[in-house]
Length: 251
Image (tube, one colour):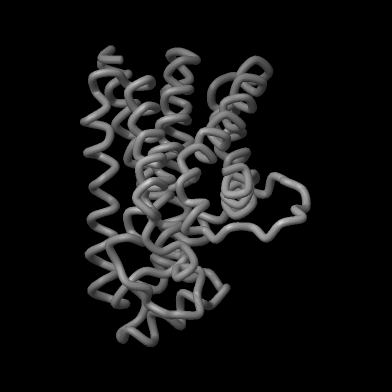
């Protein structure tokens, strides 16, 4: 279990976990702990927000918190979002789309997707931060925890689009590992949003379903970039719903 957790932290973040004398388990076993790693990322963002808010106010704190979560994850999911946007909508054939997604250069679709994601995340945190610390905590924890379940669902639903990419490393979780991931997501969603947890989870399902349909139709399956895009889009969807609920004093 500890080895699988270390693998999840090592893969999803840039937090050093130290060398291991034993072989690390594959991502199919580490996937059980993806949502828990999301809680760690959200906690980092929350700590940075708290310090920055005390020094410079909610807007600067929102920018700092978003940057902190991007840095601690090595921009893994933002890179996936940009490459997916470029690939899925920038090529005319399956082969060309996959080629574009593998290209490290940033195109127009990718730039727009990346800028939109970051700006919306900053705006949502600034809105939440102008009200209360607890609202920021809800946005960061719910968003990052629930979002880390998105690649698990996509990997289980879709075949791999290419056998030599990162997407094939995850695969379908074992039943026990899937239960661990699902329980983590459910517990955090209930603790953070209470009776509104089903609404939050339903909102998280929207980008996952949309991305699944687009990836299946345009490239025939999932890639590592698609999994990263799933995290980014789900995080954003959950943040929007949590902020909306908080603004209406429903949380």
